[in-house]
Picture 1 (cartoon, rainbow, N blue to C red):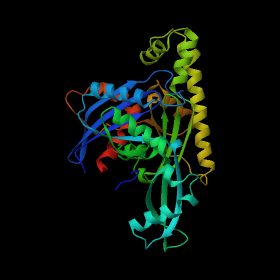
Picture 2 (picture 1 turned 180 degrees about the horizontal axis):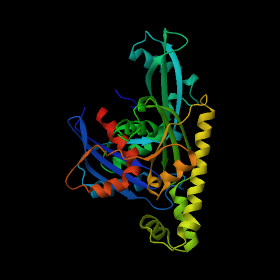
Picture 3 (picture 1 turned 180 degrees about the vertical axis):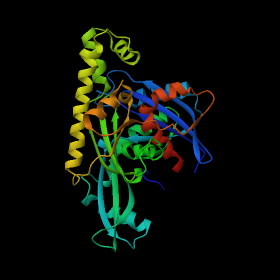
Picture 4 (picture 1 turned 135 degrees about the vertical axis):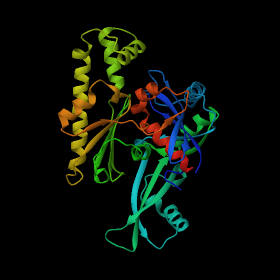
Length: 353
């Protein structure tokens, strides 16, 4: 498996979450990128709660996403979640070459990982010179159970695609962050940025300093809870609750009775996650928050977070500096832009394959 950078003109990403299949195809245009195709296919309501994810169901929905988008590419980048990986930073002699580093890791990995290498895919990246010993370098080892990776590969294969790269979600988020042109001030390179990704079933926090991931965490909370509360309160189908949430076509008391309490809880959970980070990182402060995921499209959520946390908040749009193919609707793409942040990061990763 390749989880680090090791060019091509076009790249396809398939972002698989508990709620949807998201597809994005990008092409290079000089020094920039163009959006060629994108689509989002919702998964069944009970999909995320299934103990064993069906590769065949994933494949059928990936096929739908491909057909709806019009993409013709046959290789794609996918990702596993942060919960599916194990990481360890190891110090090795700086004199070792790449093949020697790999051989050393193969021989000693069982000292650092709770599983046999036969049960794992792993990759590594040489970081920086060790602060305590200049003759050593720090090497980041990343591993995942084979079943976690094979599940993604199989689903793509059944859909007629080949997995060119299996990435990690937080690394993909870093890729998307690297091309954002939101006004992060003149000192953005030295800022500590928190990317809060509000998904359907999970809300994740990725903290970046100087563009590098320094912290990740996640919690079981997301837009699905809001949909289910709408469904329960108004006694309507889950599908109609989701549609009403998107269009705003709900009873007049929806904002006061359901949306406001949900947003208050989201703010509290975000605040706790940020406090957990700052308390464990020698009191490093957050300079700015970027909102991603479908939940970032909630009315005024950026303003509410900013006023409650006293931190500047921006809704992420990774496509702000990209050109679009003629058949792409700017309004439709920008409406979905926050939820495509991870998908975009995966597509960018594909240019390294």
